[in-house]
Amino acid sequence: MTIDVICPLYNAENYIENLHKSLLKQNTKINKIVYVLTKSKDNTEKKLKELKCNYKLINPSDFSHSLTREKEAFNSKADIVVFITQDIDIRNDNWLEELVKPIINNEAAATYSRQLTKFNNIEKYTRENNYPNYDIIKDKISIKQLGLKTFFSSDASAAIKRDVFVKLNGYDNKNLPISEDMYFSYKLIMNNYKIKYCSKSIVYHSHNFKLKEIYDRYKLTGKFFKQNSYLDNYGTTSSGSKLAIYILKRIFEDKNYKLLFRYPFDMAARLIGMKVGKM
Image (tube, rainbow, N blue to C red; front, side, top):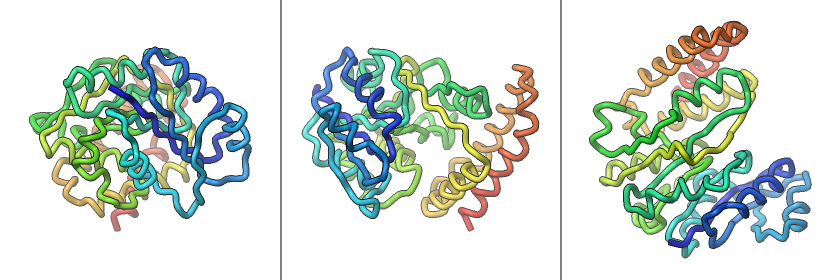
C-alpha cells in the first residue's frame, strides 16, 4: 500500500531538519511527503529548500487545523495518509511500519502512535494516561467501557485509509481550531470502523506549557465540545476527573512532590478553560 505523509508547518526551523531526516530513515517506503508551510518570519522555507523538500506555501489566513489536512488528504492518491505535526521527535526507524501495519493487515481503518515526553512535568502523566504501553483496538463495543476515550486519537502521529477518509467526507469541510482528530474518530467509530492505538509506534511529543497556554487550549477544547455537544453523552466531565485523579496518584507514587505546587493551578486552568469555552 502506498503512503503519503502530510505535515503542516509554521515557524518550524528548529524542527524541520531532524523531522525530515527521520522520515527518510524509515524502513517503510513513503510515496510522498507533503509539507504545507504557513508563511512566517523564521527560516523554515530556507531550510526546506536546503533539504530539497517539496512544499506548498500558504497565507496565515488560509491555514486551518482541519481544512489544511483535509485538502491534502483529498488530493492524495495514496492508499494510506499519515498525519504528523512538526514538533514530534521520531527516534526509531520502525515508527511508520508499526503505525501502518494494522491498516495493511486490515485490523483497523485508522491508527495512532504512542506519545512520550522528555519532560518530568504533569504532561508526563497525561501522556501515561492517554498512551499506555499496550495496544488497544477501539470500536462501537468499546463505548460502554471507555466512554469518551473511545474517540480519543491524535493526529500528531496518525494514519488512515484514504478511501475511508474520503468516503466519510473527512472533517465535513468544517474549520475546526482543535480536536479535529476526535471529530473524525467519532465518525469512524459510529460508522462501524475500528481504530487501533499502536504502542510500538513511538514518538516524543513534548511541551512545557505555561498556565495561560493550558487555559487557552482548554478554552478552545470547551468551544469544540459546545459545538459538538453530542460528545457530552459519553462522559466529558468524568473523563477529566479521572485524569486529574490519575495525575495526583502518579505524583505521589513517583514522589515527584515538586509538581504538587503546580498541580492545583494546572487543573484549575484546564477546568476554567473548558467551562469558559463552553459558555
